[in-house]
Structure formats: structure tokens, C-alpha cells
Length: 391
Image (cartoon, rainbow, N blue to C red; front, side, top):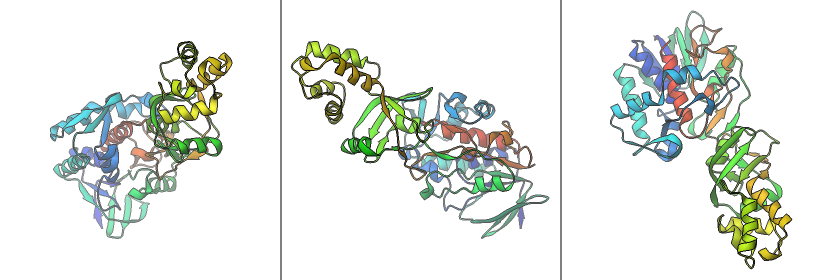
């Protein structure tokens, strides 16, 4: 049996950051993970280039039952702090749209950076250790198939349920529940949406078509790309809106963002009276989509023969196409899990459980879920750093 100051379960983004900060403070830290390599989800992120943070990180861009909870951690460890670490290690990076920061090279550089920082402060990392038991008496005791470890502090950093093929498990949630911490509802987020019936039939014919649009649901509005798939809809705008979507709710798509679609169609009737609706719509939309919508929404007549009423109705649908998803593609395709350990049970400053001394929960397992575009990594860095400050 080996003893440490802190045991961290999970060698992902949050767990490694926690180990780094705790090690900087002189703590003897051990990180345990059942996977054979550290940072598996980091490696696949951003198409292999890791969208490691977002310059525009603000609490309003996170979903949580308590939208104020994330403020403390995000204010104490900012995107600029992580960027400074990236630059310290000479990792070239670039900024894409909407404040998203990526490696120029490989996501492996980010994992290598984190492992180097752990090594520099003496934080131990043991991979391929299957956890067989966790208990608490005078200290936390973690049993694995390769030994037993104890510490007065235990950090749950094994992530959520998303992308199980990468080794995701519900371990953090199971342990939190075992120690009496309440959980909020969990469900897939940042995930493609599926459809059924006539809507699906149309989408299958349009599979592969993408266009800029605005996805809306309630107060949420995301102006990014939409992609038609053989199962429904995907693309950044759909992934974003999926975090707000619940079964039975309709989403709306504005297929002509920044344009008055009704006015545009009425003007086209005057300017191109002999044109067909398909060719008019194809001026603004991908050809296959223009053809499908013209066939579904307007009579097969030239523009001069279209009634103003029909054009107004079609224009209204172009600006607010209401669609009701049948479901989502689930955790297999979800980038993150929504929900998790109830923030009411945790300190927003230290991520420590209020009723279980020495227990901390960080990263995706907490009921804090960011937008697409580096926000969830920034939450991992910030929550991990905050816990590392106190273990």
C-alpha cells in the first residue's frame, strides 16, 4: 500500500491540470487511469489539433442548473493562463473563428506538455490501472488491479459518459453517488440530432449538403454551419443547439441569415418573372437544398405565376424552418455529457464536496457544460487548477 497527499482518478485534461497545480504546491500526487494512455479525448479533439481554449470564455456560455457556479474557477484560471503555458512549451497555435484556439501541429503536443509539467513537479501518473474499489475511513483508499493507494484527498476527474469508445465510463458519477453527492439529469450534448418520417426522408436525400444558418431554441441562438446527414442534422450550429434541446421540442433554422427571405422572394418575382423557384432559391442556397425546398414549399410554376401568399409562406419558412428532432445520436457521438454532479454539493472555489472532507469533483463530471469551441477544455483547466489549489 502506498500513500500520497492526493489521489486523482483520471488522466484527462482536468486531472492532469489538477496534478500540475497540486504538485507545484509541493503535494505528493498520484494520477490513476484505466486507459493505456493519458489524454485520450485531448488527442482526438479539434480534428487532432486540439481546440484547447477559447478567447471569449465567459460564464454565460456554459449550461448548468446553477449558471453562476463556474464563475469562480473561470475567473481564477483564464484562457490567457493556459495560452501562456502553451507558448512556454513552444507550441505553435492559431486562432480560428469565434475565438477558438488550435495547435498548428498535433494535439499530441498538448498531452506532451501536460505530462512534462507533471514530471517537472513530481506528480506520478500510472496508466492501465483498473480501479476495483474506492472507500474512505481515516483516508481515501483506492484499490486497483495493480496495487492499493491511500490519501487524505481524492479527486474525481474521469469525465462523463460521452464517447465510450475512447474509454469513457460513469466512474466519477458512480463514486459521487456512493459518497452521497446528488446528481442532476445527465444526457448527451454537442451531439447530432436525428429525425423521422418525412423530415428524415428529405434529409437523407440532402446528406452531405452544408450551409451557414442560424439554429434557434428559446433564448439560444447559434449562427454557424448546418450539415444534413443520413440520420438528420449535424454541423456546429446543430451541435450547439443540441445542448439546449429536449425531447419533443422544436428547433428553428434560419437558412438565409441576415436576409429578409420574404422580401427577397417577392423581389425575385418582379426581377425574374420567368425563372423557376428552384433556380431562384439556388442563388442563395446549395443547389440540392434549393431543389428540395422548392419542390416541397412552392408550386411548379414560374415566379410570375406564384401567388404572393405562397411566396410569403415559403419566405417565412426559409427564415424560421421549424423542425422537431426525434432524438440524438447519443453518447457515442456526443462531444460532452450535459449535467453531472450537482454544483450545490460543491465549493465553487475549490471544487470540494461540502459534506465529504477531502473529496473533489472536476471537469465533465460536474454539472457545467460549455459551448462548442474550446469552452469545455477551459472548464477542465480551470476546475482542475482550482482543485489543485486546495488538495
